[in-house]
Image (tube, rainbow, N blue to C red; front, side):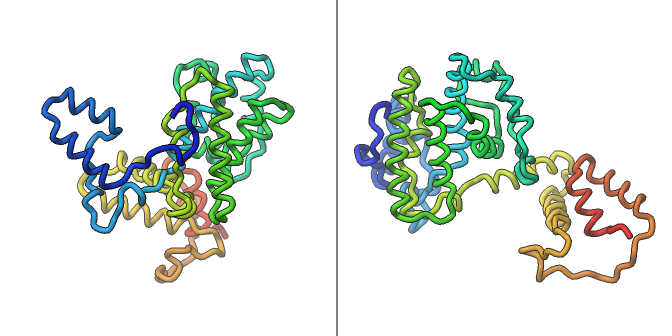
Length: 315
């Protein structure tokens, strides 16, 4: 894995072999042998998904590009490149952070504006950049502008990573592009070892060699980012609710949110044909209503604004 970066030179795991390895782990007579087999096979325990009929856990489980790239490959490689540029005096960390803060983000991107990178983060002996997946996505988008004027092998290396990410995130990919992507990933990993020979290739970098686009389609359709974002919303509300019927309360709040997020004149893509309005009348005391809505939502400014405009429009 540290020196070979061609997918066809690796022995692929098959479901039958995977099941046999799981059985060997379960039948291990000692804890030491069981731990050794887990390390050798790269398996912790038998998954329940193996028992699903007509489902191949190995070939039908796509790599999640959010965890592989935005929480693995991109933070590690960007951190190494930034550290090299700063230590070689080609760039100042304060200037880089100032460029992040002052970049003209779009209204959509400003929600995931990247955080400034601290010196302690760069000095830490880990692969983290302390950015969320959404922040890493925006950072990759603006990084060519932040590194403008620097022309060396390390900046070209990051630009190649950005090109790989653009192809991986594409909703439609041709077969020729998939084959070119495979070659780009192989060359990218070879260049990584040339630029950072003392750094080990992490498993998530190796996973890029096995992106199953041809068999499972564009990976953006299987990405966990939308699920994680919705899960975060539910986690925030779960800590504020009573525990009599948490599921019902979360469903009510989610329906309320979906209804309030409509823009004026645009029908909701899910509830457009299901929403029914009863008798309504004009609100006269809008300031009182806004204050009550604000007390209910707290600091959730976006929802307050949407609610005031949609449900309680001013005269």
